[in-house]
Length: 203
Image (cartoon, rainbow, N blue to C red; front, side):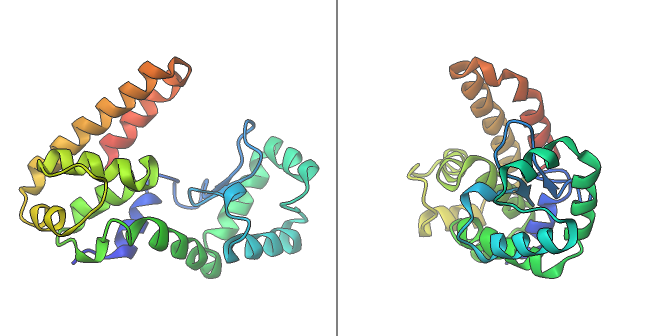
């Protein structure tokens, strides 16, 4: 069966972040940092947020809840890089973020019950990017089973008996089509299209 840690590791190989270079970052248009692909604005109730808040205050004198501190951080790419290099080696921070990915994405795609690691990596990465329901619906379309966005016994059995190479080829094609549909309905997102397609190619 597929291994969660291997799928999680793939996210840090240019899919969601690049190893220790930008595992922690905050963009100018955002109101909170992202750590290992997790946008912290929506995770203030978690152990991850509490831990990061404590570490950033003690090690870098940054208060995650202080808007002025965050504005300063946005302008300081070198500081973001230093924080990234520090946190990527912090096993407690990594374990907390793993808990989030396992609960919100891995368990919902039933990663532990999928036989092939490579296809699981792809499904997991896209569940993180598109949301579980949409990612599963695209999977079900390629498997030619009912598209309800839930991995049940029929989807799981069909997946575990599929031709993996052909399935991955179908998934990548469908992912790219979906990103094009997003841009068609929201033209202002066209600037992201090349990056989204490159992301698919790296899967």
